[in-house]
Image 1: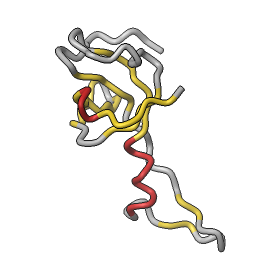
Image 2: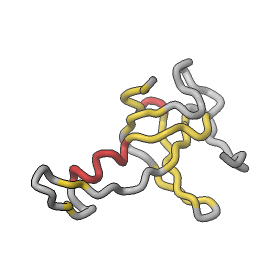
Image 3: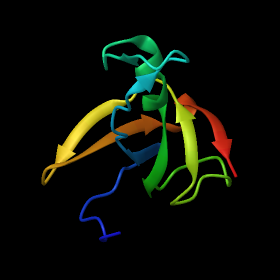
Length: 93
């Protein structure tokens, strides 16, 4: 990954904004992107940058996390979510 030219401050974490996936039902029907089930995966992503005042030692660049209440931002055509550490619900190994 290209080195970022910007970083979050404080207790914030920057993650890649995941792309919407098509959801296929058990009967083979593809659901539209607007359904809640297809958006469910949008709250899981990998950390790309860390703020300088995080409390948890479990958060590292490349770690996959589940989160709530992201703030969307775009830089040079790439989309990211900026989230507070307190909005991280799960950390995946």
